Image 1 (tube, rainbow over the protein chains, first blue to last red):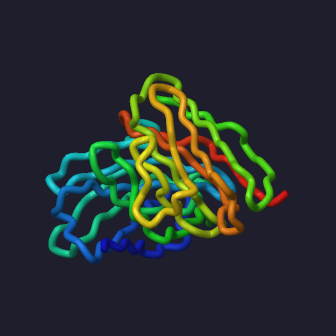
Image 2 (image 1 turned 90 degrees about the horizontal axis):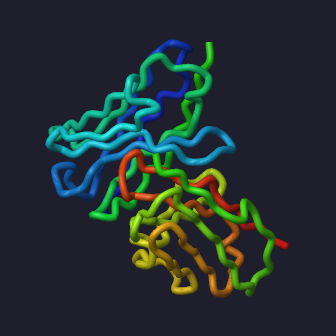
Amino acid sequence: QVQLQESDPGLVKPSGTLSLTCAVSGGSISGSNWWSWVRQPPGKGLEWIGEMYHSGSSNYNPSLKSRVTISVDKSKNQFSLKVSSMTAADTAVYYCAMRNGDYAWFDPWGQGTLVTVSS
Amino acid sequence: DIQMTQSPSSLSASVGDRVTITCRASQSISSYLNWYQQKPGKAPKLLIYAASSLQSGVPSRFSGSGSGTDFTLTISSLQPEDFATYYCQQSYNTPRTFGPGTKVDIK
């Protein structure tokens, strides 16, 4: 059973870059699934950030595309998210998730990590 | 982008009640619709995928229906552990988008 665990960057300074990793256990990142990031500002709804396949194929939310990079590290069985030019509006709980099947549902999810943008 | 709306935005119900939540897409998405439950401080949990398929381990009191633009999540008999926020998500294309959520609380 696949389990996901996000790293914990905590505080990011305005204009800085967020770097997060999601460790995959119980399965291979080189399988048939895509690897995704979703975020949730405090008290608000869910926003899809993007996804990547182990081959390097990727899809990004156009609203964030210019600032976001997702990568896969097969040697470490993990995937990563970088978001540049962070502002207070990027303060959120960031989740990693596995995308399944043709109907692209997200399961499982990591436990989430709160990223606060503050000086 | 495909816009997702949900109604109601919140509802109050009692244990044992039948609860129905509606999700509407801004264009036809066939059956590319998934439902999640989220409790405070926790990650979303998949309930239903492909509009009507029950995720393994999810109680059978949860069901989903619909296709095209209109979808429904039904809880046949609300249990204490079902008080949570429910989100729909379209997977027809990217960007994948979620509905704003429906909060179910205790009457």
